Amino acid sequence: MANELVIKNLHVEVEGKEIIKGIDLTVNKGEVHAIMGPNGSGKSTLANTLAGHPKYAVTQGDILYKGESILEWKADQRAQKGIFLAFQYPMAIPGVTVASFLRTAVNAKRKALGANGSSKPIAIPEFRKMVLQKMETLKLDPAFATRYLNDGFSGGEKKRVEILQMAVLNPEIAILDETDSGLDIDAVRIVSEGVNALIGPNLGILVITHYQRILNYIHPNFVHVLVDGKIAISGGAELALQLEEKGYDWVREEVSSGK
Ligand SMILES: Nc1ncnc2c1ncn2[C@@H]1O[C@H](COP(=O)(O)OP(=O)(O)OP(=O)(O)O)[C@@H](O)[C@H]1O
Ligand SMILES: [Mg+2]
Image 1 (cartoon, rainbow, N blue to C red):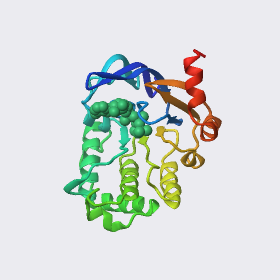
Image 2 (cartoon, rainbow, N blue to C red):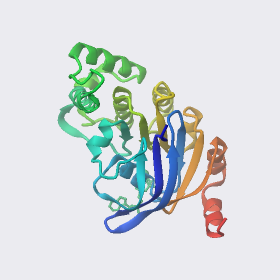
Image 3 (tube, protein in one colour):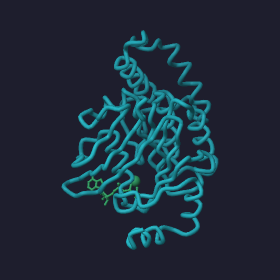
Image 4 (cartoon, rainbow, N blue to C red):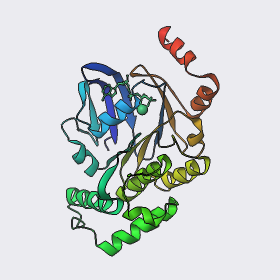
């Protein structure tokens, strides 16, 4: 079977400037990959490019999903086919409630996947039950369902609602861009448990983070360090601990000495 997500010699330009300078990375279902790296190294650019943000231009290389190039796929198509991005900075959508946003997304995905008989819109009682159950897992007050999406949400609430979206949409590839930033100590655990409940043979995850802490809960199989648009070093979970202790300078030194 084809690998789930294959990033091949990816080069990305933003506003005419090359930010991603040749990344190769394969993420299979059942795997958790952590991506770390200094500010401005291109982590969010990689995430946005995978999600199909129109501002990010792929100038070289390819992104394959289940063996097929997705470079021509628009963001909504990628989402409907099972690629999910939890944003570093979730945007507010005043006038659209969390519940209606989620229901629209679920129905769009059902419509796109179609064939297996579930292409009809989800029945409202079924939807309500599913969302309430997932909110409970994430310790989110049910009142959030009727609030406008991210409008006035605290930083931590936004991040929990991102994971609620992930739980409801059930993606095959999930990219979490600093989902742990701004979460209090309990919330990191709660959100991680929410993510862990989704981890399994049908999901591959890319966790972008600055801190080892979340990786104590969401155990990575692989850790990659992005420096200046390239993966400078890859390793196992121990690499995150090493970075926490030693910082990034030694990685930069290894890169510049050509190792
Ligand atoms: N839409 C954009 N317009 C202009 N420059 C951009 C845009 N998106 C990214 N960049 C630039 O690309 C570089 C990489 O940014 P990116 O957000 O990918 O870094 P990051 O690794 O996610 O950093 P952080 O750890 O701070 O989140 C930065 O210099 C940034 O200013
Ligand atoms: Mg970022």
